[in-house]
Amino acid sequence: MRIGKLLNIIGADFFTGVPDSQLKALCNFLMDRYGIDPDHHIIAANEGNAVGIAAGYHLATGKVPVVYMQNSGEGNIINPLASLLNEKVYAIPVIFIIGWRGEPGVHDEPQHIYQGEVTLKLLDDMGVESFVIRKETTDDEAAAAMKGFESDLSSGSSVAFVIAKDALTDAPKVEYRNDNTMSREEIIRHIVGAAGEDPIISTTGKASRELFEIREQNNQGHKYDFLTVGSMGHSSSIALGVALHRPDKRIWCIDGDGAALMHMGALALIGSNRPKNLIHIVINNASHETVGGMPTVAGNIDLVGIARSCGYQNAVSVDSFEALDEALKAAKARNELCFIEVKSAIGARSDLGRPTTTTIENKKAFMEYLS
Image (cartoon, rainbow, N blue to C red; front, side, top):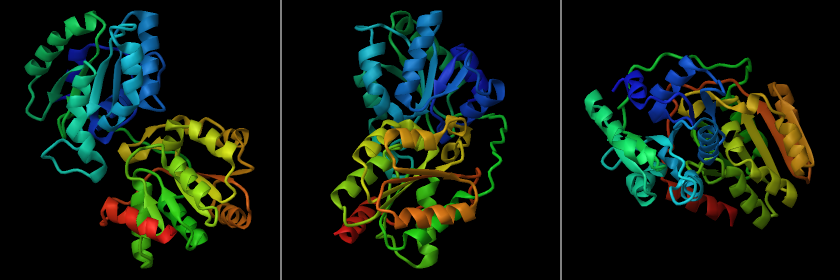
C-alpha cells in the first residue's frame, strides 16, 4: 500500500514515535514532508515518551495524533496506555502505527519472535482495536478499517494499524548523514583492541553485529561479549548489573546514542552506584541508523555534561582515533567509573552480517567466561 494514501486515509497532521525499519516508508515520508517540526513531527526518546507527547497534543488541540513504533515498543506504552489514555481514565484517543517484526510464519531475528507472537494479543488485551495492513491490502480495505475506527476514537479509545513486512511502498528517498568521520565499526575495533580479554556488553543493532564480525575476523571467539540483540536502551543497565557483581573484572559497555536516550535514567543510576570497574562508551552518530537513519537529539545535547552531572567521575568526548585511543588507554588505567562519547559517522557495510551463534549459546559462553 502506498504510504501517502494510507496517511491521507488516516487524516492526521501530528506524528510522534520511534523509528522502525519496517516503517521506513512512513519515516522517510514524514522526514521528507515535515523534517523535525514540533507542529507536525517529533521523534521521541522512547515509545512511552511518544504517548505522553501525543496526549499533550490532544489536550492542546482536541485532535487525534499518530504514534508510530516497532512492536517491540509495545512494552513501553503499556503503562501510559492503561493509566493515561484509557477511556476509564482520561479517554485520550491515539492512532498507533506499529511495525510487525516477528510475525508468525515470517522469518525474523530471535529477539522479534516472541514479541511478534503476542503483538496482536497485547493490543487486544489493552482494548486497542487493530487492523493489519499487508502487501495485498487495498486502499478501500484500509479506508473501511479507518471508518470502523471512528466510533472508537470518538469515545476516547485508541486504535492501531499493524504493518506487516513490505506492506508500505513509495517511500521518498531521504539521505541521512552527519559531519563526523569515524566509522562505528572501526571505533569498535579500537575498543576491542583496548579491552583485550575484558568482558564487553554491546547495545542493540548494528553495533553488536559489527562486534561479532570483528571477533570472527580476529579469530577470538565470542565468549567475551554479551550481545544485547533486543531490549533497546538496557545494555548499560545490564553492564551495571554485571559490574556490581563481578568487581574483579573490568566491564566495558558499547552503547548507542538512541539507546542511551531511550532510558536515560540508567545514567543516573550508574553514576549513583559508581562501579569502579565500568567503562561506558556511547558511540554517537545522532541517528537511529540501525532502523533507517532518522535523527536523534543526541547531536544537540551535552552527553558528557549529563554523565558528569549523574556522577561519572571521568567523562570525555572524542572525535578522532588518536583521541579515542588515548581515552581508552586512560580509562583502562583508572580504577573509577568512566564515560566516553565517541562522535561517529552514519553508515555501515552493505554486507554486514548477523551473529551465527544463537542467543542461548551467547549467554552460556559469556557466563562461563565470567565465572
